[in-house]
Image (cartoon, rainbow, N blue to C red; front, side, top):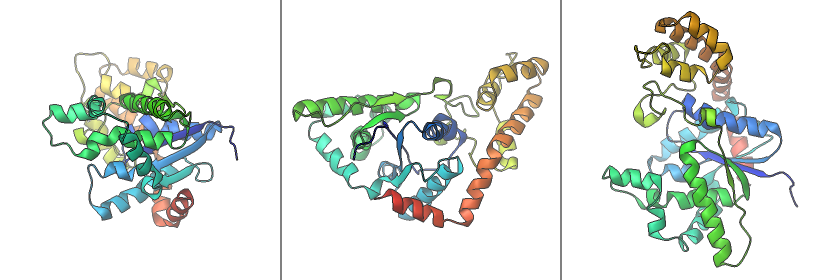
Length: 299
């Protein structure tokens, strides 16, 4: 059976509580692309990748389920997307091994994640070193046309393209197609409360399912630069939920009043996130949907 629509593939690791950086940097793109009806979407929970940092089986199971609930809560229709666990499809690791046999160590040593770990004198696992090859398998296995990623993940798509070209050349075939990254520049890097990229490892996140009280605490803790007319970090986050034209008048009117601007951001973020939060709570009360989705996705 042939499919005319190009394939979209994306995945996310179940290694921690989701934050708005995950949502605005990747998940919202995925939802919009799926809703466009232009693609055949495959979205997976990257539990094999997560093993590099999490070896607690019970936590893995719990976070996997939470991630599936989160995807549905943010608007992914399980009827329109293949939503599955990476570990339910053995072909991911099988193809990774085949790619390993044609990949050199110096090539993998150029990967950003490896170089970053090496610079910090970390003891690097084989899984961390080999991460780009498993990601190449994730992507190429489904003949992906596009892969929604943040700017910092672009190199992984380049690795997948290189690997596809090399495999096709070595084995004299055209079996793998070359994927393209799909990056929305205006939200490619979501700022955290300290101005750095929002990341669990920096402790600067705003949880995606935060209560109003928690949201208030996080926003009020955003670092501001008193030398500027406009609090850069507050404004950068505000742009995620309102257009610049809508924000211009408010930021002019309340210039220098950072507390007022933060309060406005709290209102706007809470209004935007409330329906997502409500849907997530609903799914927590009836998790049978998660079982059905994952069972369907594995076949």
